[in-house]
Image 1: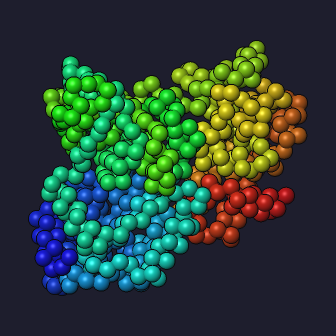
Image 2 (image 1 turned 90 degrees about the vertical axis):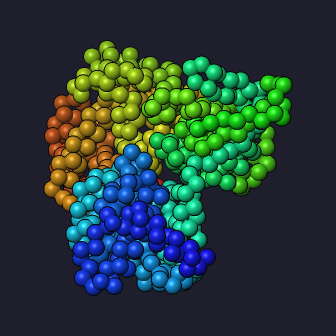
Image 3 (image 1 turned 45 degrees about the vertical axis):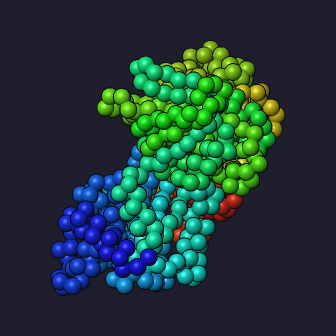
Length: 563
């Protein structure tokens, strides 16, 4: 790479987005031109990586005095992501960002997630309400992008600074990713934009069939090893039109996919729901044309609109050990958009991600213990909705199995259950389809659980949640975010101080004690804020409260203060 490629990048920025970028704060003409390219590159990256329009990408640029190392920000609430971009434009097209610049970017990321708004300029403050709203999302993912027109990789010291940030923020789950785009990678993005971003793939489909009316589609079994090749070659570009990207290894669904591949690959086709792929056109090859046993096809400009987790997990597992996917097959549907009406692709995407979806919660209703509790509560005039799709009872009339699970988890003496309720409540239902002793599910829902205790912990949790919201309203910044990300640990602490004896007391005493619960929650919230300020001042809150080890420390120290 060199000046020719650099000039091509500069020209594309100038013709596509540069005219929309604000450089009015730059007075010197030479500096203004540099700023236009630097800021233009930041906007250009958002166009390429996020699908932003030129105008919207330009508005997302916050580069300028006091930017705290962040040059652009793009918030996608539907995809639950925030892209943070830093760019460096080198006229010589050489070198790499300096260690100081990387330090500044990393510190800016820390300040942003900790809502340290006093450290940012007015441009970033213009995004404050949207950022704060996004930071309340406990499943938010941060995508950090460092883009520069040099040809060198980051120095080992600079990479170490980034790695330290990722280690801190991705414990225990991967919430933050980091990508560096040097001149070569930027030029690749430019070439992709010129030739079309969606990939073309080939597939050998076993036992294939077809549909021709009203729209053309082919379906059948595809070897997992071939799907792994798609992912390794094209990566997340396969999911351009999906409602979400590949979520990584640490999720309930992906754990189950990985386990099947590792333990029973020959059963994968039976257990997995399959993959749906949209494509602009389909070409069938002559090889094997006379049999339905196997067909060879080319699918042009594809997008996986359902099954991103299946494809991504297969790709990851195959990278670790190709032998694990050798015996697995997947049902795949390829739908051609050639003769489809406008909007049909979006309808398929929405439909395949919302219809006929069975979750672990759906198996809970099969557990006899749940039926016992529901029947006993019904005799007391309380509705316990244990089936998905059941009408949610009015607050005074009853509650759902979701509420019950979270309340029991928070009330348990072991804080790990509260952490799990925050991290991924669905894992607390693991084994509900065939309840066994020793599982987290059976620990919470067992023959010793009375309908009275269940209804009481739900009532307590409602008061706790309402009291947390009241306390949050009087706070801002990091202290306010603790009420969002730490709500389950705050609830756990409140239950421990409230005491199991109170939950088991007679009705008169229990109701009397409930009156003091809001004040107790206020004290617990304050103690939690103090402990975190002292012991975890820079930790990313979304990760901190999903880390069982650190939450045990928080609980131990907070209870010492409270008691």
